[in-house]
Length: 328
Image (cartoon, rainbow, N blue to C red; front, side, top):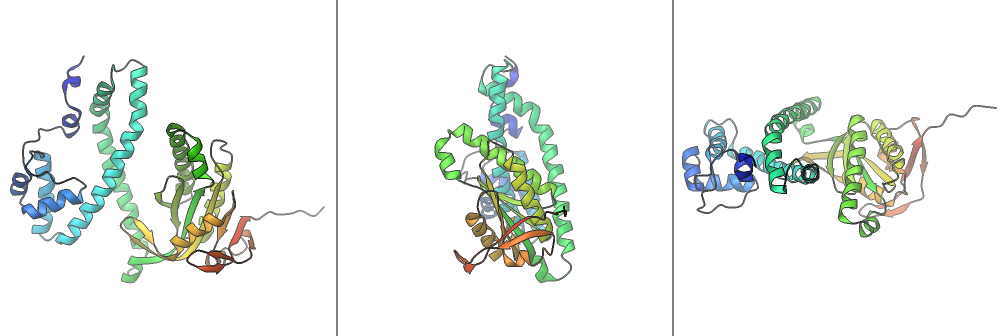
């Protein structure tokens, strides 16, 4: 057995010895104990008490925060908002990646690459973490550049930086509750992953931005109602050929949306979700604001008024690709 199997997994990933308490880390980094405690909480970690739970890398990370505040690069409130965003994002990312790697661990054991899950985990951590760490930083920079570009495109109006008109889409799997009661955990996970992968690919390829996934649903935004509608129809057609997936339905609503904390808020978000819930399988329903922007690009049909929770009686509009007919 190689020496790597004798190294604890956590120590291998952190690549250092944990030798400092929270108090010692704060002193070395130039933070008050209160600031250090707030930092670790924002990053998603429990209060360590008097345990030696920190290493030199933690001191370096905390020093970044201390210097940003001391030299007024960022005010303290902004720094801690950024660290909270980082902690929540990285926690979800780490859980997601570990759940994906479980299948790889089992496959490595079956192929005889490792004799145990612990050994397989150590091998993966040793070989994969350094490269994916570099990839993660690169992808973050790319997304940061894209986000900055979107912000610049909004113009110099301060109010526009807080809210802007967007078309919000909500793609939803039909009869998911019944499906989840019928499938075992592994089968259900495969359905969810297939949906998120295929739906996400179509949305991003069309120039829209995935805001979040909710297992059986996906929320996305696009500044152009026509493009958002076309993407929605492609989601329907693209996923309908997947026999392992339930039928999909999409709701679209257009209006002023507030972008905060990596999420979007506002009436269009809620209305898009409501429209998806009343849509029939393999259908796209839009609100009047979206329909008004579509022109002659699609075939539309206004449905009878119905009660939409939180919005009163509305007349949803079904959208389909426009079909051309030739005279005989």
